[in-house]
Length: 202
Image 1 (cartoon, rainbow, N blue to C red):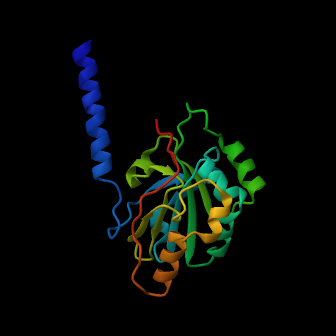
Image 2 (image 1 turned 180 degrees about the vertical axis):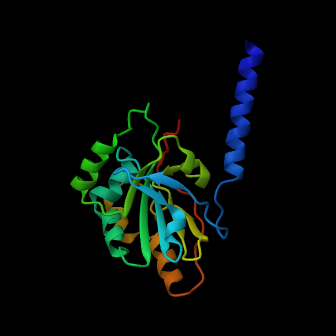
């Protein structure tokens, strides 16, 4: 029994290590994925080639997410970049057995209440897409350019607390990456350490 348990633990560690090793890398093609959104519609990353794509990892119960949603900071960004050449995809990788898990119906109510405006909100309940990208926190942000290259990964900004007042003086890395890319400029900050709550993977 002990040997079996040890073998299982080693296998789990190796799988986790492999997932991290194969996680999305800035400067490389963004890994393709397909997920159903909370309305049951299939969303495939490859369908947005030719557009900028923002990936936002999300958990409504996380205080860091609350900071950006109760202040309407995240919603204002979603609306600001709601254009023909930009797609905003929100991903929730919370596993169904965790207390933070919300059903699709509850998530629909949350989005309506917060007046959130992602192009699609997707439940990644088995964590496969989160692990594919190496997403660690909520929020964890990624920006993909029209050629399908990952050009930014990390924190939403440089103020790593939960106070809404911090937003006014924060440097927003997502905004910078999008604006620089759209202006055909080099990305000044392509990678940062994300901050927030750990993603509640299976």
